[in-house]
Amino acid sequence: MYFVAKPLPIINITWQAKLIISTLLMLLALAIGLSAIIAFVRHKTTANPKRPSASTKLVMTGIYRYSRNPMYLAMLCLLLAWAVYLQSLFASIGIIFYLLYITRFQIMPEERVLASKFKAEFSAYKQQVRRWL
Image 1: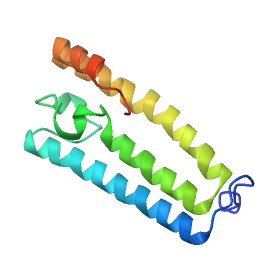
Image 2: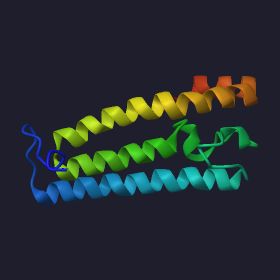
Image 3: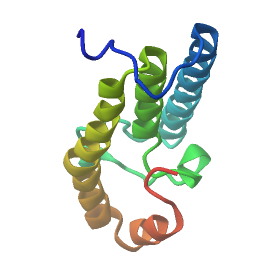
C-alpha cells in the first residue's frame, strides 16, 4: 500500500484540483454504470457479467449506442479517479493491467457468447459501436 500511495513525480496538482477531478470522474462512473444497468432493466435481460448466456436480448440502446462495455468503462473511470486522487504511478499502471485483464478474461469471452447467440445482429452491432468509446 505504501507504493500505491506514493505520488507521481511528473504530476503535481493541488489537493483541490485532484479532489475536483477525481470527484467528477467518480460521478461520470456512476452515471455510466447506472445508465447501463437501467438499459438492461428496460430490456428485461440479465446484467450479470458472469452469465452472458442468460441474456435474452442484445441491448443496443441508451449508453450501449456509444460503448459495448459501459459497465467496464464505469469501473475504468473509478480507477482513473483513484489514480488521480492518489497521484500514484502504481495506481496508474494498475489501470493498464485492468484494461488488459478485463479485455482478455471478461470481454472477449462475453463477446464470443453474444456472437454465437445473436449472430448477425451482434456482428453488425460490433461494427457500429466501439468496445470502450
